[in-house]
Length: 127
Image (tube, rainbow, N blue to C red; front, side):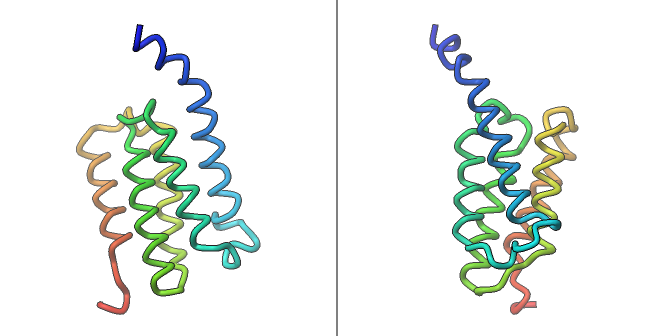
């Protein structure tokens, strides 16, 4: 009964996930005309929303990629500088993981997530 109850949330959760990913792309993607004027906090909040609604795609790695994006948003806020190359890599990874992350071999998915983690924790000023 509990599984059936949780399953009733699938459609709404998946719609919310896709909406959050779309909003991130619209506001922070390469083609977003005013992405540099967006607040760091907005990226963090949108990535947090992805984490919140990604339970039904937990085997795809979307939640872990979004956690890495939250870390990157924090880093940008601390330095008061956008790292667009790193953000673009995260957005591309989120798109790929959402589309086919669960179908990727575990080793490939984990390597991708580890790469995102390294990118999000890289500090240019530290070399």
